[in-house]
Image (cartoon, rainbow, N blue to C red; front, side, top):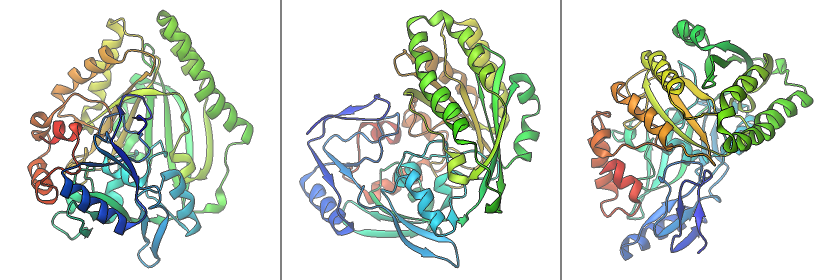
Length: 430
């Protein structure tokens, strides 16, 4: 079949076959046949992971047809959805039921199963990642058995965030909340000022994040406040949304990156211009429209979680490195926060968490920058986002996750023949 590549172009594969799963019985048959023949399956969602977690070495599986809302429990606000439902589709579907996801990341192109399986998260000190919002998982295992798990199952901590290593996820039950709006306030600031009051700011906000522009002292902050009254919707004017989010953040930013790829020495000056071009703005819109941002400029990304208290020191280290080295970084550094959870392979397992993400334009060499970033993390008990670029293997990851061996044992029990394995999973799980 034709070559498959992920969104970022960091992974390419030519699997032997591609299968579109029709329904759950078809997934059961596919698992049984593949296991009996000694083959391997790998489910691919939107391909938005930067790592090779979704690389298919034998049979590429798509679950696009397992999409949409299956069932709504209005008393508990719990909703079963098909695993292949894209997040940008799920938001409006839930809104029709008067419901919403509690929190979301800043990209909504992923499928719900892909997002939870890789540990996708948003920001907000009181809120977990997407997998922490689950109350049920339907999974087809290598022997073709359909298993349903809920939070009372002893294996829940492994199944809810599974890296795609345990089986084909066919449906997920999500604990939703009533539909709400977000009032977004974005404004420029200075890095030292933001870091000096970081704890107070994060604790006072429902959702807070900021972007620091390397080679400058400039940041752009974003504070989202939850609004229950949906009648208070006050979105950006259409012209402002097109100017800021389509033209400046995508079209112009693409052009700037192409220029800086040819003339890297202009990067510090360009970052100053870009950062100062961002003005304050406030608007109120549906939660899923505010959480997610449309991005068309392609890039490479590495993101790690650290204990929340370590974020200021890590940012200062990163700033010092950028000032002292000749790597020219046109992309801002993204910083977010999340509550602790109890999922075995969650980057926020057992601790309040800060996330620091570095990016590089896809036409530029990212290696020196990312490797320097990774070296800074050695002293911070850091855990990599499973879908974003990192250099760790099972030996190092085991020391950072106290339930690591429990997950490996669960994988051995559910997929002893590694029907759902691939080289990335062998590297990170052993």
